[in-house]
Image 1 (tube, rainbow over the protein chains, first blue to last red):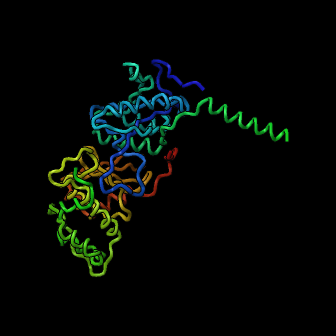
Image 2: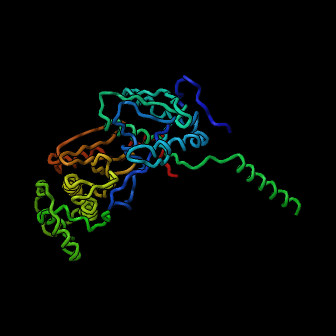
Image 3: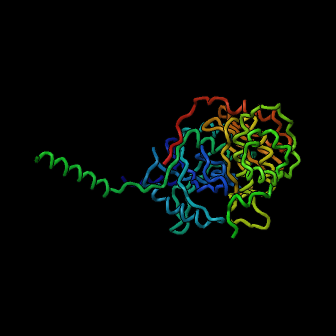
Length: 183
Length: 189
């Protein structure tokens, strides 16, 4: 299946899935094996530089593995460039309609924001969640975590299945069926 | 480079009075006892707790005993400059954390999940899923956050203002059974 590409300048649809990039969380030196590790931290949503939170549009009706595969190297490269260096660990995703109403009541809004840069930085899937400026960054981070955690899921960074892989599995089944028939 | 082991721990010292609550420490090994004796919380608020009736056992005492040594072991030794923010605690944050978590252990039955933030605070997460309370512990204040029935509750108080009754009130308000209005669940990969 071809990779989904958002229509330029079109609004973000209710069925779309948004993904917030997650990075490997630092662990305290003596707390390496704790039980009940929370999947998300407010640190995954903390943005000190302003009141807009970057997200990726991961799919039109479901999370598109091809979109994830396209964005993975981009996200990993950007994480590597940050100071201190970070390790990209997938996305926290949520479908827009799951939290749109709650978000609107609290003056959050979502808009597409494609990035045009060098070839390695182009990201037509980029979008921004605009947050209320009368809230602290911490409050915003904690609120977003709540929505993504309650209404969403985690998306890993496994590669999308290749057409070649699927074909070879189908061929194996065909050969198996043929040999059963022959015997 | 200094190795990251518990041997680096005793930069925080625990007052003997703050240990009188934990009956099971009496049975701890002599090495542990010696280590604890060398530790002393620099914050005077560590002495806020009153004496317990003889023989009483606190529900949270066990988890607190387990984590206090880990907090001490995660404290930056003097003169050491960590490269990885979020992996170490300053002495001030560690002292505040011991004070706060010691109080919390009276109110929360299960240990929190603890991690550091890049800006040096200690984050303690009590509860799971929808019923969750997050505390962000800095040297002189603690910020608590939870979402109850879809509405955020946010409270920042000085460390000493988090009394047992306030913690109990917070726990009862935030860790109530979930509303059941979830639309999905977290998966792993």
